[in-house]
Image 1 (cartoon, rainbow, N blue to C red):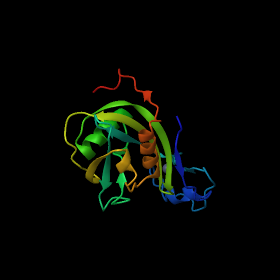
Image 2: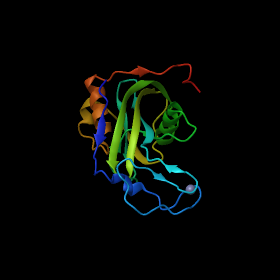
Image 3: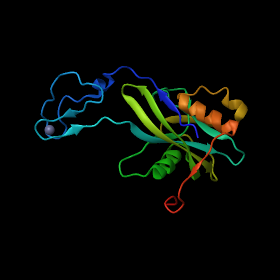
Image 4: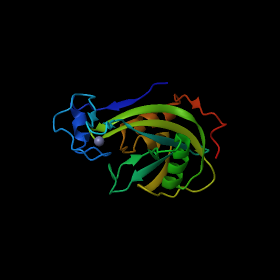
Length: 197
Ligand SMILES: [Zn+2]
């Protein structure tokens, strides 16, 4: 399995764009000096450490029984509005990535899915404020007609030919769908003992 990375490094001090002015725990004002790469802000009063980590998320290749893939057009008010993407979103605190997948697909497409496995993991550094680590899952839609919701305003099933004409918001999505239609995605199965809810 090739693991994809979409990275645009913007310099050794990029983390300075995500710095805090005050300690979120005790309110002490942090020192106003530049941070070295990977240096963390630490509170001298209460010991709080401000960790900067990528946000974990999932995206889902939802396939139809005929093998088409579901893509959604992003609402004009969303980031990358008007472009197309795979359903997905951020993993909430106290939520498993499997639960996230079911929830996001239901919110954005109205569909229930049977998850088959993990097909990739992607590090995305979109800009200084958006660094994500995305688990890419493959699943098949169960009965139902897709209805767009949340950040998506239109959904469509695409086959291999239609995929070439889709204006994707995220390079990683495009490459994953490329891999699906080229037949070269491999899967890591998910333990069925923890999957059904
Ligand atoms: Zn503090």
